[in-house]
Image 1 (tube, helix red, strand yellow):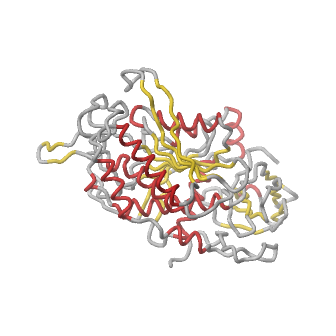
Image 2: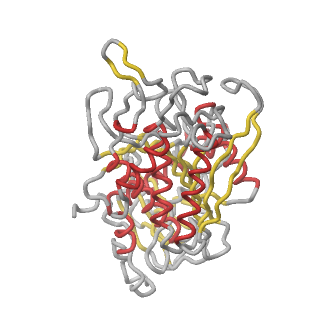
Image 3: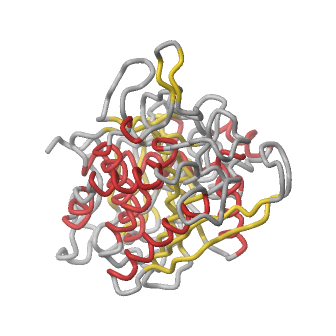
Length: 449
């Protein structure tokens, strides 16, 4: 196994005792390692080929046919979640979350947009939720053509397959927080399904700690000729949506532009990858999404939730939003044979390990603060988190893209760096469970002390 790029990761097995200040948490959890190896390419292939066989999954397509169109596809996806739930004794709450969308750009008539949602309830009533999404709708070259073939194997049958596979993997475990698996519709008409689910989450009072959105995760050879099955990109916004002019002014004075909640979630996933995936690498991209484009995680961002996008490193636009055809000797079309099923299975496993680690961890601290102490020393403090056995304080140079150093402080809610000036570093805090699971790192609000 390769050395972790983040040697201070704090994940340990249940057999370890409650942590004390003198004990530095171990870096590996056997349960999470098992989850990391659990993705099955054959399951991914079966899901994608089944979705492609519905001919089109355009959101405005047939909803009544048992074999063709968006309605048949969503009923089949619900059946997959129902089967997983039956195998685990009813552990998943499976339902549709839907709304009527009125005519607008790309929506020619009023239509019902239906998300398929499976909820793995947490073991406590903390209200904490972690969400994984992918969209099951597809489109051809003309997004208003609801009858022509639109296979949507990579965009986004791959993301839907990853969601279903992660649900299968994690259905064998019990977690503290609630995990939501969602196959969304209406993405190709303007992120409609993502908006419906994010707004429903807010209306229901879900404390969503993050949305892991999977869109175009089929790997394969890019249009640039590069085929690299060892990398997945993760996009994240920062500052967060809703950041005020006053917040920006404080950031200009003390920093924090690169430390929004979504950016911390992306760094967390990168850390998990470094510990459990020796041959698979995260490429962090510090943008909300690909240049000039969008995904369903941005609907969660708009509601004030953290959210990131997983996507393959080298896209092929001849496979996206294309009616299958051959022109001038070039094949166009998003067909199943273009997908690397083993790659998608690895992406599903990375999602599952990240979800598991977050759901076994305590909630992140909600009131971290940093201030100059005396002279060149720095004080970091935070409020106690229910269920946390201790805390780890992170720091990095202001120019470093990820957290590089940390200090385990046990059950204290304050620590002082006696010979480290606040000027040269950024600081953050993570809550740690008694078994060593860490929350996302929380960056002190700009100006808070």
